Amino acid sequence: MREWADGGCSIYVDDVSGSMTAKQQHTIVVKGHMNPRIHHPLWYQVTGILAEDQVQTSLVANAKLLMMPQLTQFATPGLHVQCMPDQWLATSSPNTGSESVLALACGTFERLADTPVTAFGLNVTTATDVDPARLAAITEDFARLPFQAPISGTQPEPEQVVFSYKLPPLKLAEDEHVSRRFRVTVTVKSDPSPALSVAINVHHDIHVTTRRNFDLARMLTAAAPVFQLAENQTSQVLGDRIAD
Image (tube, rainbow, N blue to C red):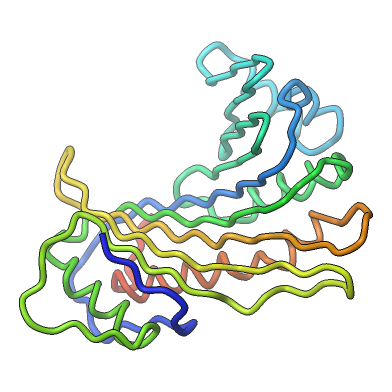
């Protein structure tokens, strides 16, 4: 594994040729003090966050419904939800975009506004059939401009390459701001067939200097453009051929 930190905020790739298929998923993770008992699918229906047909689908025997004091999880068409005492997360189905998972997260924490939250993450994960032999070229393209760390000579063949750098903070009020770090992980997959996975995580640490509740839904909405940034960066690196 290699890591470059605190570089610039743009990634450009000159040429990645060839065709590819990809599965792209969006995830929102919220860190804090959660109560998994609340997060039954029917709660999402009663509060109007999810439609009745979505919730009824989540209640069937094969829908991965699990209710325990320390863990709740369920799946609806297009979404998978999981809540543990220290985090809540929701993931979209492949290639369905970020809108539904963002709406779910905003709706949930509008109604649970008293939940103590310290951080959240917006994630885009893309699994592709791009030849893993391109890992070295992708590494160089990632490193060249954002990190001013050109790579030359014979390089080792790592199974994973990690880049991490800061984004400008979000400042939504005088007494609150959100620091952000953009992290890219490129991993070689060998099972069941050779492929590459690109995971982009934008981690947000929340800093509030006065004792008060803050509007997490507003923060999530303000942060949401990084989903598009992550999609664009992945598209550039992998050749702008993400298939349905």
